[in-house]
Amino acid sequence: MLKIKMHGDTHVGLVRSINEDNFRLIEERNTIVLCDGMGGHAAGEVASLKAVETVAAFLLRDPGANRVKLPVLALPELPAEAVDLVQSVRLANRRVFLAAKSQRSMHGMGTTLVTVRFSDGQVIVCHVGDSRAYRFESGRLSPLTIDHSLLAEWKSRGEISEEDERNFPERNIITRALGTRASVAVDVCAMPAEKGDWYLLCSDGLCGYVDDRTIAEVVGQCHPDLELAVQRLIGVANEAGGQDNVTVAIGAIEDTDSAAPPWRTAVTVRTVPEAAEEAASLETAFLQELFPVVVPNDDTSDEPDTDRIPTLPFITPPPAGLPAVGDDATTEPPDKPKRGFFPWSSKKD
Image 1 (cartoon, rainbow, N blue to C red):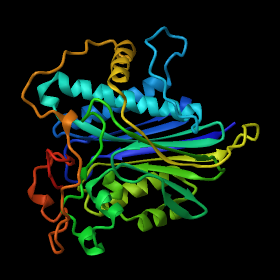
Image 2 (image 1 turned 30 degrees about the vertical axis):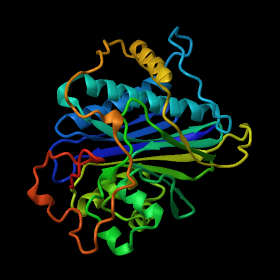
Image 3 (image 1 turned 90 degrees about the vertical axis):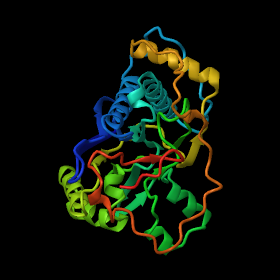
Image 4 (image 1 turned 180 degrees about the horizontal axis):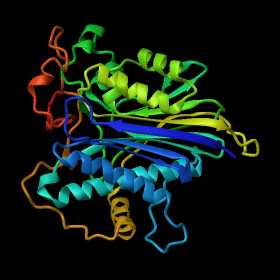
């Protein structure tokens, strides 16, 4: 059978007083889930914690329990374990969204999420937002996720120069997050499990301040000591200024299951679209049974309707020469929200 070793840790950083990151090693399911909350004060911490709890509770649920049936996800190219993981992320989104509507103080809260699951000779990665997953094999570090961020949007279109990228003033604006809409699109990919490979998950407290080359060097120097690698990566992030909370978790494949069916090929990133309204209702009913709480009626306050957030095409890239992000970080209060969700916010760290 697959033999997986996992380790993770989180640190508040050197500037903030609240840690809005959360992670969990779900050893019973060989799964790691990591979230980076947004919303300021305690709201971001609540969002990330609820998301982590929901994924864990869903994966560890009693399959024989008599609950509302969830909508069927038709993803024939993916293994059942991957579909299960996608469903857990959709439920996490729905739970955070409902919680955000239930209390005015939590309106607008949300969280990123990245998760990896090792099962039946394969590795499955899901993500929403700009927390990242990497694979480290044979001394090479390869990104497995593409940030759902304003900067990544412009890079993908080829409409931003290297100079503009370095000085991009809105690096922390994300374009997709859990909890900001009633439903969310989830990116998922699957690949064969290979003995010796490491899978590294991190919040942008690491990858937003430390480049991939440095991350690879640190991991290579610490290999094969997982705990040392995690602690050293957190240390490097803090040495870079510690402007943000930082969380790192690594899953190492120590052995593969020779009896498992051969995995045919890697599945490139597939975006599972948002659920229809009927499916969202079923998800709400399922959550009420999984987490027995009263789900409030639709909020009638005058808060922005995050379910109607528009897309990006009318934004123009910033001119070259603008101050780099973080230059004025020391003048901001430590609990200022570290994340903006387009277009309601344009906060910088």
